[in-house]
Length: 327
Image (cartoon, rainbow, N blue to C red):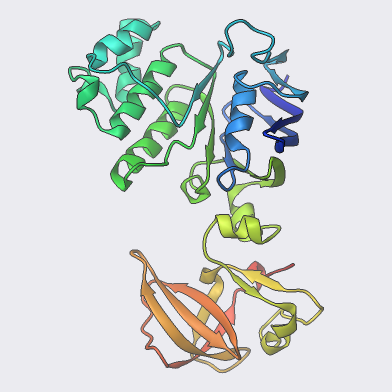
């Protein structure tokens, strides 16, 4: 029996498709990320799975049982599925431990483990009005988990978080799966946040699945520019310019464009199976540099740890031919 089955669900909102024949399966403990631009239908999909929005066609089955929508139940939702929205709310000016005790259905020992997992055990004696946004989010998350759901749905959990709280939340989400055994699915408009966490990424656009697969595959071999752009910088050599690069191993002109990520460019010294370019920019990005290189009118982006280049310098470049894909 499948843990979760999403079977051809469709829904329209304001006359526009929010979900179009979406179909996929999630296994127990599998980590799935739903990626897509703002307004692509990610939140609608999670709400339908949670039983908080009604699909117009298709169905969701959780542990073999159909999940009923709000048009079918007096109180929407499924007891085994928890949904944390972007607009998480806590009672104002209450003690945190009061908020949690009100919702707590766990034995005291298990509750302590949950609070430590969510990194909130040091916040129990504070009032909700004294908390940062990231702290409030983790308390709202812990409150949901006191019901011991089997599936946790997180809607844009990293939006509006600074890097410090984002790093904490990533560790919390990982531990929720590893230590508590809760299966997780999250949606993000910045899927770079999910690459190191997800077992599978589902990319949607206008309510439709565009690509689905392991993170490494979706990142390095996207099916189109929409998917490529979601995961950061990329290079695209138009079909009309491929002839310039035929000196490189594995590159042939056959009427198709070439896609590759910046890290697949190699700066080499030998002028053998290379093309010549001019460095037109160098940008420090924190843990790496990005260099703009112009090759016969085609601008490329290369990524490296220590560039040792100068703007205006002539360089020889090669490509990792196993990571160049035709479109």
